[in-house]
Image (cartoon, rainbow, N blue to C red; front, side, top):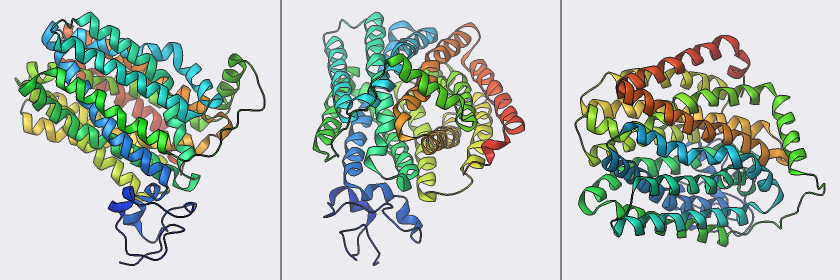
Length: 440
């Protein structure tokens, strides 16, 4: 097929699958593909060279991240046999976001985001190698994992605001939603594959190799960041205190009801929904009578559904009625969680998690895209810092809550409790926040 390709590429027959390996001779056009080619619009952001580097590096790195996350959870459960301890690790990983994420957003608006990301990614790589060393030496203890999870949380508190806002430097606004959707695509590709491979690797060779592979995977994203050709960074002309910068960011959010509504919704999702996956190791053993491989399959199935959802959003491109689709996702999410809570047959559980993952990504991806669309560049880092704080800051509390309910009652009771709260919130959102459905 012949198509009109990005500026500088000419009129050539090219497959979007080759975009990662092609270099334009001129800067990309404001939108990498015209709307007359909806299939190619799925990959529009890949028409921009810096985003291609980012995409390729992140795919490799996230694959390793999910291998470590899956192996670490099962290792903790093997060491403690306690679902509550899974909550403790989740709490340790998320607690630093309360202390540092808002300041991380300020830093992301003050320094080159690429430099900040290189520092945070290098720190995460070092922590992965430390955990691998402790595991191979046979001395790893639960408190080691909690401490390293806390340190990883500190790195994430600075990494996440920079990463969320960095996309604006890689693509023009016309391709922002597509880029965010492709970010979710690569994240969930790794989620679909990494945990399954981690389960097999764990069973065959032990958790240490999962941690080693994660450490090595960070090299890809660091190399991609260093290879990018970005415009010179210009520090903000107005130098004010971090507190003043934060006040400005808070005022922006409070004066925009749409952003405020989305952040309130994400608070509930993070506290009662997103943290539920910390119970997967216990669910695999206690509910489904499985092992490390089952744990990996649970995560991968949810990731597969999320991948399908992300590709759907990417294909739709800059479509209208994103608010309506987001509202539908908030209703579908608890419905699938209710179904999952009552199933004891592993293949059917995996199928239900595909639907759960699809609805989850509708909520998370579209929330991110709509906030990024509404926010101005001047406060983007700070607003995304607040968004990240809400999402990751409430997760540890949710992990503690889910682990505590599961330990006191059972894992299925914890699932029903989470689904009930999510459904009540979704109905309330539908009844009392009609402006959300009108967002395009």
